[in-house]
Image: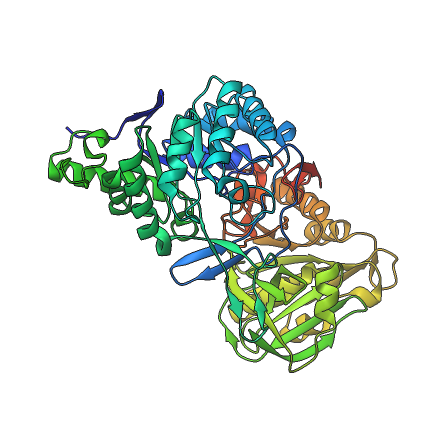
Length: 305
Length: 254
């Protein structure tokens, strides 16, 4: 009998799907909708110290095989967001608090506040490609990734996940730095830095000009990144990028991910996508004689089949 | 991008733009309107099909920049999005406050084409601000007018006039778009009478496609679950008439 339950850094998930940060997660009630839809865990919107409005619209561009966004980290600030986390926790699944900041101290403080608000784990956003002074701007070098993870780990008892950027020459190196800094897991990948131009308007469509590309278009990039990271580190990997079906999730898992995050697929499929992914994965596992998700982690690597 | 074919004044603060080209959709659905270099914002469709169009109130920077656009110029449009109005029964009461008449004039035309009888309550601040009175009368709707200052029709709010209209005639369903206070008032009346109701709601929207959660209302997304909601949903909204999210996602009073 196959089953989807999976354990990651001490968190027990009924299935390996998580809501990715940034979608459906500004309010506790929206996160409850996701919990009811069957997700294994929820990652919150990335939260900072102070309220932040984010970028002016247009903040999204719909593309044929993906979505370009530059929301710009809008969030109500950690103080106001605490009550949303409490509400989200009523969903009965782990809630992972995503935080962003401009310095090691700021991020570590936010990690502490997230844990205090009840988050079961903290995800460090070291990878948002469209907010000045945050995300990928500070998470693109191994030194900063390591020091941010180290300081954050010192501040909390809950697991710390480092969400890494693919906008670098070696994401494996960033993953090694995260591991060295004490991160309990890495999340890969965040969006790819990208741009869309309107020929008629003769200008980039996003008000911020640059944005992050997500959705099916980036899946092969994400799978490659997870594959490389799996060869480089021992800590668990959470895969993300263009996952909308059971097969998509299996690609990431066989590349080395223990869990997967789903974001952009909610655009076309709605919250039902979590159940669909789980159903399809379970069908595959039963047909192919895999008992648990863990049995499939990294099997695409030579010598692990 | 689409070309502006017609740009006309409806009231001192409300204008209509009609575009070159076609967009299929129903009343209550909306498009995201991009004024390059300025902003992108949601706007209800007031015309669909060939020569589709929007009717907007000049309020912020974006709509003021839109007002400066001339016939022949291009703006960005994506959509249509969301769930619109649908006729329910034969004898319909439609209440539009201010710019709320933009989707409802289109709905009145659709309902009349479906052989429904439509009674309208059009509310505005003054006689000059009444939107689509002639358009809906031409379509064959029975018109009742309220103005805050009494410069035309009933003096007072659209909700008060609606109460009087409901008292003298029975309806199969109530349709509303306008200020949230008005919708909450009408919902109370619909509940009392056991009247099916559909109302178009408004929240701060960014993506328009159900992802960013900016327009979250009790865990529903106004952009994809709405903007038109039915009575069973409307009744269950705890936040309706009370709180909304600001640009940062903080809950603030409506």
